[in-house]
Image (cartoon, rainbow, N blue to C red; front, side, top):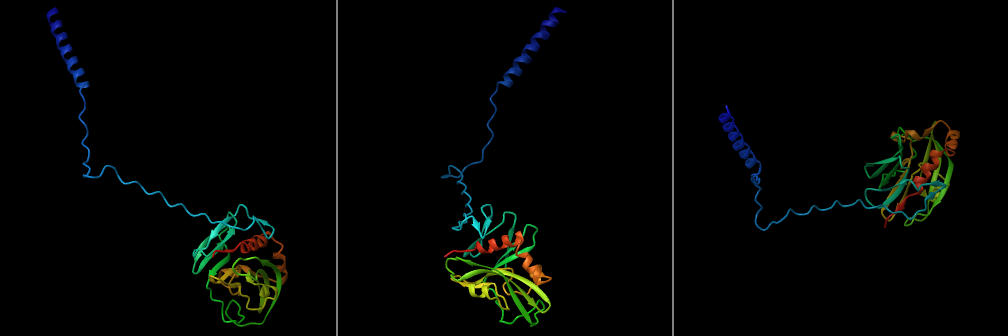
Length: 240
């Protein structure tokens, strides 16, 4: 019985030694792909181009509204900038931008070289109608590159329908609005339309500017939304 135990012990020692030898063996290196001659490292990744900041020379307060937390928007052509509230947005449109309220409803438009009509006073159906206008508000605008411009708000009656108009216009037109009301002016970059509509008739998305009466239009001037929209329009800056 003792000789068999010694034999078994010898076998165990041999197996243990073999296991230790296997554990201490150096693993073979994993083959690496060959690098073509002359190349020592992959080319560096080019850093992303930062989005240029849009600067403004206007004060934070515009027409009595604090715009310090507003967004500064550059138009697609790069010829102008303006401000909108932090929760508003813009979308590209033919010739410029639409300005959307926080709920997604279009409030204003910015257009370059827009169609300013043929001088006729037309309603939403494109029919010439009798009209009358009433001035609601007027503010002179110091717009570098386009002197003599003002913010103008007016109510115009087209047949039986009243429409409120807001926009930037030559100062004389803003003071004495006549139909057709055209929210556009000439600039070094060409004609620019910035307002509720270019040619006011209350059609399409601009139907939101229709009101039931002149009294409703006058009441709107006292609302905070009107003050916000006026500040958006008066924040326009032209870039030479």
